[in-house]
Image (cartoon, rainbow, N blue to C red; front, side, top):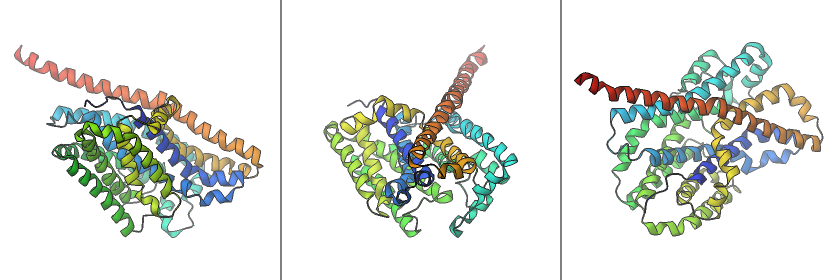
Length: 383
């Protein structure tokens, strides 16, 4: 059976993942504003950081969906074009957000002090936040590649650093995955990658927290690899698999939801994420319908810009308006919480239209011009 070129629900699920990450960054401030301290004990809100693992699985799957044919026998031109497009996918927006933080560092010492504050020795690295070596590290998106903790600028950008590492590894992973010729082998490799990740997280005492830095790269590698191999499952599976897709997506959502009632157990959500992505690829069932709806797909389209800017906005508001926001009554606080969320969405929309989309178009134009120029070289040589 020919596979669909476009899978809207996979765009939608990316938006849901970004929204889940947003909740884990916002719920502390929201709990203070609403005078609802019990929110601080919500496992659903606490575990929003696991949306990042869903990003990584989804990224590996989508890259295979788009580029599988090109990497069967990759050429230098294919690899070069892939990296050009990927560069313009992440670096321009990351750079713009970084430059937006510079005035705060130069002229708002109170904001810098807030970003460097910590109460737990495990977070002592925060003392280096907003350092200039950290700026360079974040500008290059290499902060997840080494054990050096030079300081965060936009904390969520560690995921971009890990993602860039995934892009670098993708040609090799794709070629290896293409050698898998049976569904059973693909399922086994995908499962083994996720099992290895869970074992490592338990062994390193990171099963119930959000490890970044070098461990962020480890999370990316195993989730990204699982996504790459998962596409082979999708590609090789018999047509009859489609009839089980709706049940698979519903079961995956049920499994993820069930884990959120117990501490530590959500570390196994990576298995639910892979099942969800595989099921959605067939575009069947009520879960797919919801995730493929226009509002959710729209959220998915702006999700990268929303994701990369929301933490900065929350931080600025907590710094300059935190005391006032915490004095509001419940009704006014609820309006403020909704307004902050809407503001984060609006900034995401603006960055999507003014930075993200134009930079992607620029990357494609540069790639096309290089390809066109190379196409003319043999003719000129003959002439």
